[in-house]
Image (cartoon, rainbow, N blue to C red):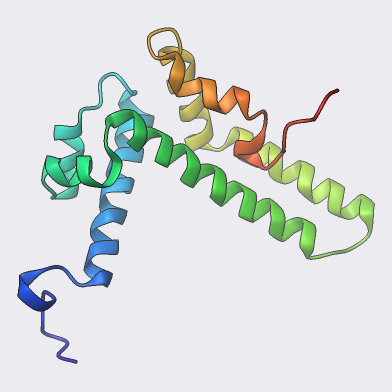
Length: 150
């Protein structure tokens, strides 16, 4: 394999390059959504920041709403994995519960989470679908499954 090769066969991006470009899109979108809000963020801005065509965003995500949902899922998955690691490392039950509680407190006060709360609070009246999934899923975003009530 030639390390100087910039693209795959036919000039297409390699799998690694494609993942890196998608990561740049997600990072750019997350930064924009969390700093300026959902309404003020445009796909043009995200595409320009990430160095991709707007068509690429539509091809991967379909819409700005779906891109925002992907950001929510990514954040939630990261937080659930962190919490899962705490729970599976073992220890005395009281110690595990304390570490888990401290982790949830940390998540709730992280800059990206407080920015996310702000975006959802500001945008929920104009775009109720943005936060509807979050609240319908209970605490799933941070790793707590909703209670089943009968």
